[in-house]
Length: 190
Figure 1 (cartoon, helix red, strand yellow):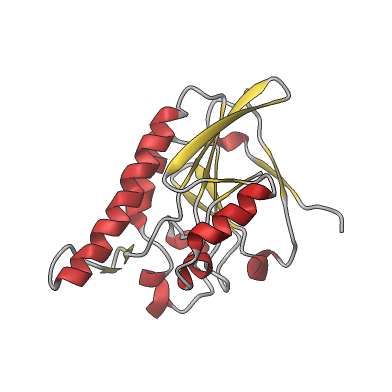
Figure 2: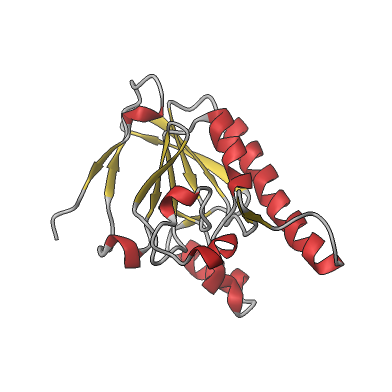
């Protein structure tokens, strides 16, 4: 199992403790990092980072103004850079997945008030996704958002339980597919 932490995990400033508990349970927590594993003879690469805020066209936070505002911009930049490095590191894997907490696309935010989209993610995260074209991108955070979206041809799913109404989904990936269009979704029987 692989996971990234979210804003609630960081809220009490105890992210390290949350991470330790998850890792003791056998979960690999990715934060500005990547991992690979073998599944049924196919190498799977996973790039993961929490991501951060910053907005989308029409409402973005600038790299300008007070130092604290510029630090928010820089923090997002560190996540974008880490996502780029992670995707580059797993580029040779036949299957590639991105795990984020914040959304890289407006397409999974529909249903949320547009006035808060700046705080639900940023399209700055979509650059590495468009460049490396992973097979699948998963994020949470947008609790009133939309389940399925995309960054270009790459499928993006908002897997917040509030959106899915389920504890999990099964995503079936085809390593033989020539591009990210090989992702298929199966809803579990509960």
